[in-house]
Length: 294
Image (cartoon, rainbow, N blue to C red):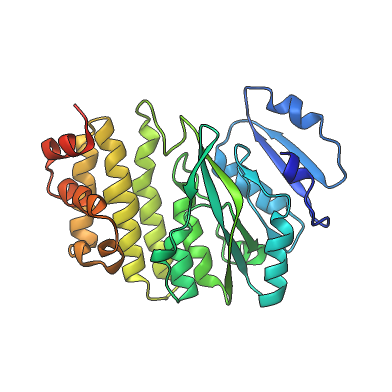
């Protein structure tokens, strides 16, 4: 929070939405006294509602989202906004460091999968609202609010935002620190039925993407592969939710029966492709061996 409150770029506001926290967050925030800070305490309505409220309260032309568990560089706003001014961009996004247990384990972006088309490139790599500067009017004018889901609400909205832009710029600097922690959507230690929100979220993504009229079928297909067939299947498999795995296979057969010919999928690692194939073929015994699970 220190860097967030002490950015090298000075003309900005910070809106903290305390979404019904039960720890010491309220006390910490109530001790922040800066003219550019607004603090909102609300009952636990979920991350989506908190972000929507912040979006509606924001006064600036551009908006950034920062998860309270993550960190940003002290030069985060300065560098993003400098590039925005230089290129008149509607969105500027940057690379991010990925941390686990206080140790950096790599960068978020894999440049090998980047493509020339700005909108398609953004669509493929941005399913979360953080690490970017967004022209606020794009979100408001097109009613791109986060849906009332407890998990995966970002996936339903963020890729589509880029399809409404005129210019998107990328800054190849890791100015954002993404912190992996237990209990997050990506790191469940016990089954939570909210994981099933992936189905509503990805359907919303499909509908809103098609509404733009921009041809991104291959890119949408890959997000189905990556977030549904691969990532969601791994999570459901961890908790032996075979009914949900069956549902994923049915969706892939109906929406993208030739998914394994997708050019982005073909560039993934051998293990990644094998895992997808085994889930699609319902080869759960082989998956248990491959993944080292009993």
